[in-house]
Amino acid sequence: MKLLITLQDFDTRMGYILAKKEEGPKKIERLERRLTDLEMELTEETHQVEAFSRNRREMEQRIEDAESKLKKSNIKLSSIKSNKEYDAAMKEIDDLKKAKLLLEEKAIEMMEQLEALEAKCSIGREKAAEMKRQFEMDRDAVTRSIKALEQDLHALEQERLGVSRAVDAALLKRYDTLRERRGGIAVSPVIQGVCQTCHIRIPPQEFNELIRGDQLMTCPHCARIIYWGGDGQYASEEKEKSD
Image (cartoon, rainbow, N blue to C red):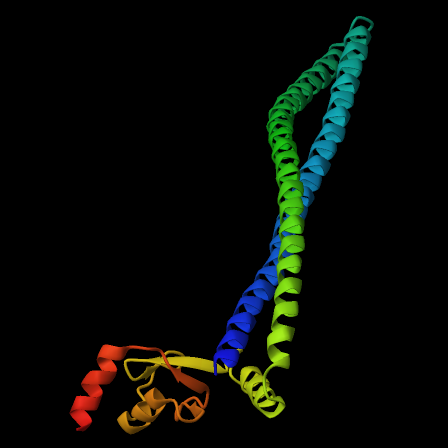
């Protein structure tokens, strides 16, 4: 029984190590996904800045064109002789001035939007750079942790192998089958009459037999191999009750 308890201890510790090993890559994957999402967001913001910059340059060109047309109209005005042509030219100049003013107002609005986007992009680049540094640090730490866990796991596997060789082959097969079917726990202590894995009380008579330790017993509820956890005072009280 002591060998089985030792095996269970090894398997529990090995299971914990394997679970920790699985957590490492998952953590790296989560961090990498967050970094990728942030970089994609930054790329989108950069594209917006580039698009706004192009639109702003186009707007500046339209303002220059409007200014050029306005100058030509003013030059043309000096050569006009009839009142009708003069009135038409003045209306054209007025329309050009209004159009130019609207373009300039829109250019100012675009400049403000562009500055806000550039500031957001700058913050995003700093955040992405910091997250990338943190990601690389966490990745290296997880890699080191996994290597250490693998070393611990290998050492436990070697120790477990030595113990398993000392266990009767049929009993070892029974133990391994239980462990596979019962979530990794094949052996469970019973304390104060309660199986510490399924947490259900075993019948008093079976508990008394378990205390005597004459035979290998299983929990009547979860079918795991059980052993007395050594709660002597409770055992005495139960024995007095049965007498």
